Image 1 (tube, rainbow, N blue to C red):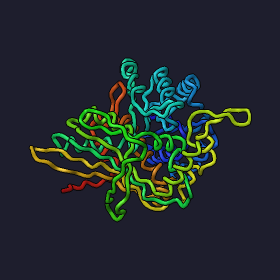
Image 2: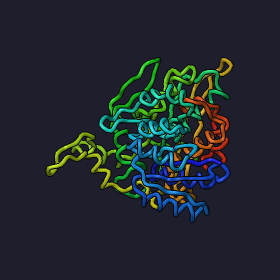
Image 3: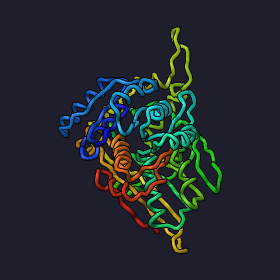
Image 4: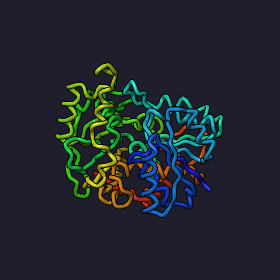
Length: 397
């Protein structure tokens, strides 16, 4: 029997809860916890209606380590699955250390007061987790997550060395809103407005925000889209763990309408993450902006179209150059029909469930703190095809 505690009741938390409930032979007991109990209860009702499975709910402030430890002691789960905010990664890892339970998340820690994306804070827990005999799996979403596994699988089966890696993320969907983000607005905007960064010849090269672009012709009828260079956390671990990488970059598509709204909001100060004084109290502009933008979970019934996320890799095998493209296409409408969420949440939530499954089944099980590409990619790749995110491999000229 395996009991999973899911922390976070946003769009991704909802997908994770639904997907875990679809596998009662693995997830025999599920508890969903969040600061807002009513969100947990609404997700639990949807899970019951769609799958017939009952899940428990709990109110929890994940910033408070002792409160999380008390919940762990009460329900005694086998795994804590964190799909809350990245700010809460370290308090939740502290709670796992105190209680002694395995941990999984989908995004690296970032401090609330600085938009800085690094694994150094979580990698610093390696010795403590190893000594405690528990495991932490970092970044088990799509990007990071599946993109790491795609790269590791290609390195295992198709290359002696991968030299060039481009991770390319396209959301070709449309929700009909003037401006909205497909996941937490605060995290999304913090990420996009920072300087870009890519790895080349052993060094990190910085670029101005969204100043580099390329056009990529996406498969299966999606067609050419403009992509912008950004920094994404999986690059940091991949350049350490994948043999031979000489250049690694991350690209994401944005519509002109989205970028125009973002530039205006940035120019008037609404994307600031530092407090400002307003009518005798301090507010953080980006947090106020988050409160007035559409809730990402509400976009599910509105969003039409598909996502396409994949890895374009060039390297050598048996002394010969080769180039491969591995990608997944996910339909917003099909995701909504299955679990009531749009594809952005679906493509993050399904890999989180699969990562938890790998750990609970003992396929990926080793004390310490690990990134996705450090384990055998084969069983994860098989489960992507089995549980809703089938992938395609193309040999390119």
